[in-house]
Image (cartoon, rainbow, N blue to C red; front, top):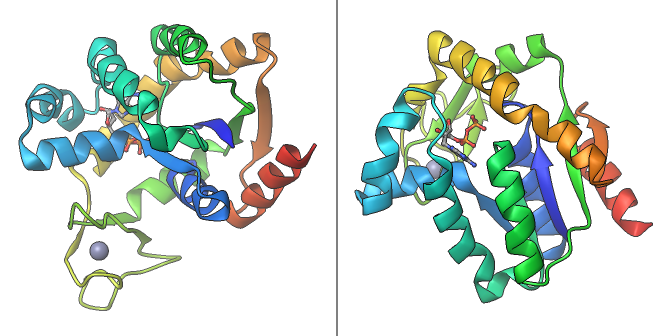
Length: 215
Ligand code: ADP
Ligand code: ZN
């Protein structure tokens, strides 16, 4: 499959992307994960991106496009990909359109995960992430807690609350989403690519996306 996942922070893009990628082997491409590991390893990209990310701001479009231009041209993308967290702005969506045309890649559709704001807020403040950059398993202290001592069930590293997941940072990220990213819904509606999915549970969403692909 070749799809884009759209949705507010906390809408469940990461979980849905992972399940879809396990389903048919399409690669999950999460710009957030790529950027976070770049920050951890201290690469050039990481150094440039860190301050924006800590503040809950978007990383500049040029940096993201340089990253994605390289990533989408990699051979593993030919089988299929799930874009998770990209594009995030109208300029990125415009640039992606040109890039896909150049690479002769045609998208199946754009999945918009529709989740009420209260649900988003609750999910984000209760989220914990494994601190091991090679694992980054996501937990929720209410619905899917890590081990009782706060360690990751998969790799045993400590789970943490990300710097951008404090109450104030979350508010700011949601505002950024409304301003910069939510216009993409109209953009892809106009392109005829938008498919909307009420995000009840990630498993149900995945089933609905598979049905849509079957058509
Ligand atoms: P979220 O949980 O907010 O969806 P992500 O893990 O997708 O978070 O991204 C974390 C941070 O990485 C964002 O707040 C932003 O600073 C940066 N980032 C990720 N993807 C993009 C993108 N496509 N454009 C600009 N910045 C991005
Ligand atoms: Zn882990």
